[in-house]
Image 1 (cartoon, rainbow, N blue to C red):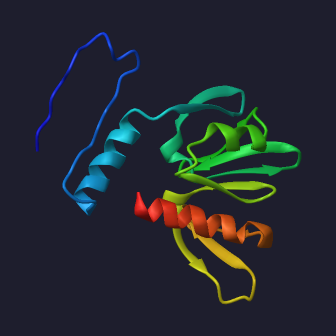
Image 2: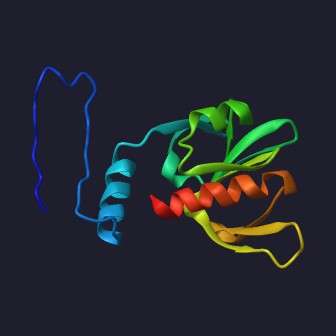
Length: 150
């Protein structure tokens, strides 16, 4: 593996390139590792305390009782943004909206059950079970295909 550092005034925004002769597991792992290292964090609240949470740690974001929450393996946290604002803010290659009230992290999906006609039951990390709304089924399939190919 070759690693280099280039400092040049033409780079107004830092760039990281992962290059390889083929798209294989090693290249994808390297890409995701670098991406997670520079990933953004979200501001959330637990009780009255502000907490910074890495986007990669988020399992899902959902609305309940007119509030919006995000869930990680450490628990649930309240956020001030609305679900549609989070949908715009999050990386579309890693997060997908599955219903009017929920966004999930594609990397936290453990399996999906399509045995019920027209519905997908989704099993997420931490024994979380949820359903993909019928109108979002094609969107989740497309997002999952894109994720698997990245």
